[in-house]
Image (cartoon, rainbow, N blue to C red; front, top):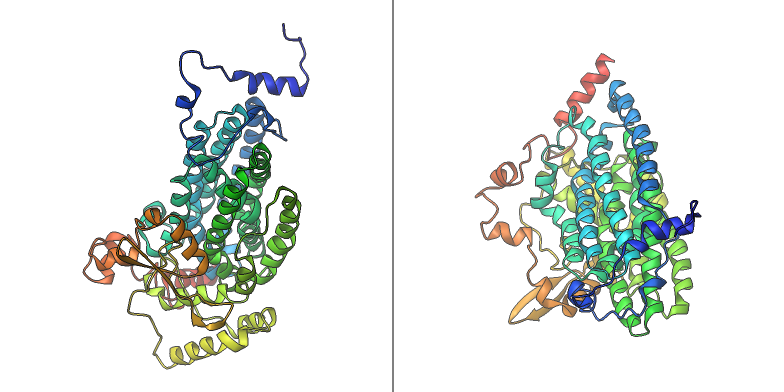
Length: 501
């Protein structure tokens, strides 16, 4: 008989672990068919530790308190016309990018954890996945509510879910999560909970939320802070899964290391959009992408992998290449969007003289040599009425789906990086050694990638002209969502509001 008053540990066990059951007339392997096919060996699920020991009754209590405070701030932000307090209307384009690129990933995470959690034979992993699944759904909802205010005043927020499924550059984040969700449950957890949530998530949330604070966007700051306590649990789950797998069986080590190599590389390719947001899209800048990478990966991540070395884990493959890419990737990513701004769902612009000087200061070894001359030429051409747009369609990487404009960091940063592989008589193109390795490890998977440029050329995205594709297939508000910020409806309305204030 249970004691009348249980301590926290016993209460947690009663409300989580003791809900599991033994299989009497069915084989346990039939109940969890995905648990073994990746080659992972689990010897004792009871070794799974839950540092937070959070029960569902406590979970709902904590979350409800956060919701009350969160929506009170949203209401105050709306009633006080908070959109007029942002530093510069150009900033709103960073929120457009977040809503179309990142918020749908939260929903994919909700679906992914709900599915993956069902596949684990251990009750501890199932409970942890269930709670994170609910967290991710909450994040979707709070982000949509926070940014819905801007939808009343600015273009580019409409049909964000539809755009995520179809717009060419949004295939980069979409393919990242579809890759993880189509993997096995252990790889999914390592991809999202460890490689992304634990190793790389600070490079996503801290710049966005700090950037929002520095630019007067208190609605975004608030949902970021509200999510941070959830993220603390998610990062703990990420660290727990990696240590649990490595302690269960020595045969798990090479599988886990391969997954770390893969998802570190895929994650850094995805974060190139965060780099360009930090360096180019924030009017009031927090720090450079280079500084963020050094702080959150080289220092914090380096310490993590030193700790994991006792299990036999080494630094992710090609981390030395990323160390060189930190000088270049944000500039190359923004240059892509400047060239294809007429086909993007947010505005682009040439950095001001003050912003160019800031970039020169932050990137003293590379910016003036490789990138400032480009912007000076672009500024000269625009002044002459010859603003340049790329009229062709870019080659996309078969794996990360980023347009292939990144360069050879090890050899010549001025030379486009290009790799290829042949699978079943077909030639496939990759942007880097990292993506090439990933493709060659699972060519049957990546040969099926839905590449927007290829689909456009095959006539599967509407048409025949670009304007029809943008308006009918992407559902962009042509002339308002795309092109340069200067002269856009967003700028005109902003100037009108400020004139009336």
